[in-house]
Amino acid sequence: QNSGHRVRIASHEAHRRTVMSRSIEFYPLAGDPKALSQWTVQSGGNISGEMREGIKDPSVMAEKDQMVKSIIKSCWGAVSGPDPLREHYELSMQHQPKSPFVADVVIANPPCIGHIHVCEALGIPLHIMFPQPWYYGTKSMPHPFSGLSYDKPASPSSA
Image (cartoon, rainbow, N blue to C red):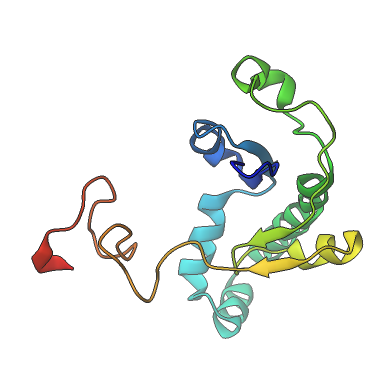
């Protein structure tokens, strides 16, 4: 944004307040992040786990399929449409432009879905990058599972 780029973060509605509090435009993706996380834990996050869970309860697979489809469909609006809840948040969104949004590039988290399809449709670059230092934590950005605070620097002994 400091270089004149229009920036938009598309994520689940649960993250709107965090994104907008940093004066960044937001677009809500479909889906329930808690259910997605729960399914990943239950299946172990792999294909064989998905198959095992589907055999135990086929209705779960249908529910997952419906959610994944809705997330993919919401990706198109994320790169080319207005925030569908803009009117509801209008008072707190005075910093956001009213001109139509069309992405020039997408930077996506690897587990996201739908990004490749919208980038292909728009003919724009897709950069897949993980937003957290999973492998090499630093003093200012510790590994998410380290239990260290992001609010204060790590002590020299924990770096």
